[in-house]
Length: 250
Image (cartoon, rainbow, N blue to C red; front, side):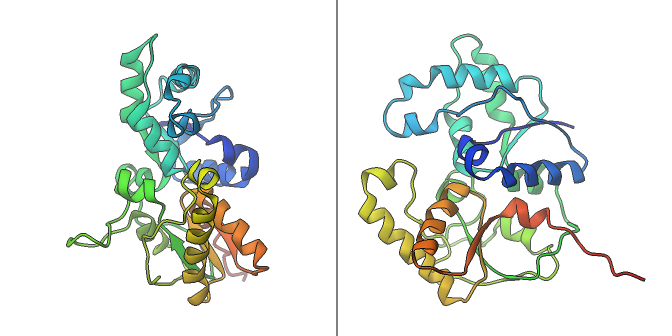
């Protein structure tokens, strides 16, 4: 299948290793991946701030870059959800609507489309997984704990296939980290307190890594960890799923 790789602008600028891991992982799983070089921001920051009328250029550029793919895959739930729900085009609305149906967050693509059940990956570390709000409540990547329903988690299902990993159980596993895009700028004090509480839950479980499917949330918590001089690191799930299995030498 022909896959268009959609990389959020903040990943491109600050965490390029996540983009590389996503590309390598998809290729390992047999996808023909192409990265459209002229892609830019999807327009989510402007839309979230009440300026969706200023995102037309981003929308048209996205449509121009991502037509013709079987699927479009992105290592970010928030950017994926924005495109799924808000992509429009004055030039070609039919193309925009088609793209909206083809865009997937990475872990939902691996679970729902490729139906991955046997990942050859190894990550011998103690890990806490942060489920971001957009992924959980918008893309339904995992079950919300307040619902009386059968629990599930697409990211954790994939992580369970990684050898050596110790995935801890958090006390408040689907609590917001407080990042919220522009919320962390407009309400910085509330955002910081929420982030500290989220980090504390992981630290109480004595994790080595906080993993997640959105580097925006992880970036927020990484800043808190650094200010606390904590040795705990953040890592995107793509980096774990792409980690190498070391074959025994003979």
